[in-house]
Image (cartoon, rainbow over all chains, first blue to last red; front, side, top):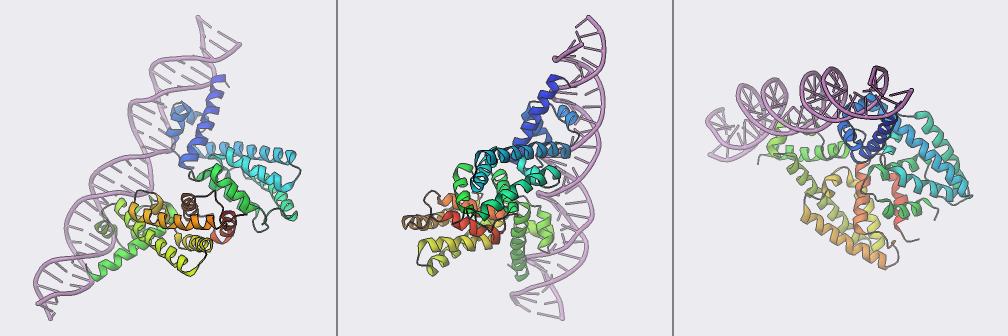
Length: 169
Length: 169
DNA sequence: ATAGAACCGGAAACTGACATTCCGCTTAGG
DNA sequence: CCTAAGCGGAATGTCAGTTTCCGGTTCTAT
């Protein structure tokens, strides 16, 4: 693979993430191409159709989340603190890929691994009495999704509120 | 206006609200008509275009919210309790009209009146030390919007979390 | 009962936004 | 300097919705 081709591929993924963030999973291919500074032809050469592109996006994003989770666990000995760090990290890095990643159809195995690791952490935090017991890991994912998909929900403004809501009173 | 025409008008508004809830502000006119048990022709006779329909929806909905607010204030002497009651009521009655109502373009005067009344209540609740001080009325509206637009955010599951997040720690 | 104004349904024509293809030109890199 | 790999973007095809229109139907006032 030629160097410029690789560069374009990365740009496309980046642009696709932004576009999906703003316009949802069916953002126009042409918009994605334009934002990547690339012709549609190039986009289609690299990703034969939207499903492939979305899958690549999801794959990449789930791995980023997994990394974030690992780092949070490593940095914070306390489970609840780790959950908080993960949420903050995910929301900030989130942008639009979440919509694709959590839609379910893409990258199911990687997604499941993430959910399992997160679930263990959540249960621990709840067992410690630090996190409210009536929210599940699925709810947490849903909330990340809201931040990613709903532009009006600005992290700086709503994250403190969410974290307080999630903690045990 | 003939009696059957009025009946159809009401049905269309009802159907439009549901359709907007599920498919967003650009739900197909044809879908709305079908759900109302009416031909597209009838829909267009009553509402020349989508903007008019959305405006009618917004108007109706903002008034419902206003009524809910009045009732909450009347029933609850405490400001924070009234805010809570209003939020619960709004989320439950919400469905999709919020998307249209809060989009901003429609029914600006009625909307503004609502925001003003709500704002006074919020400030009171915050002054009482019962509600967290770092959320504004606009944020509250945004949150209602999330419940209305995001089907995955089920009120029964997320409302307690939201209310806890909104209260002062 | 009945005239006729108001209303209705839904087929059909129109529209525009996107997806996808294709090919002549450009460029990396050995 | 050669050529395989890559590129852009005009052109074409597709389809979901919008909007119009008119022959038939239903109210309701008299």
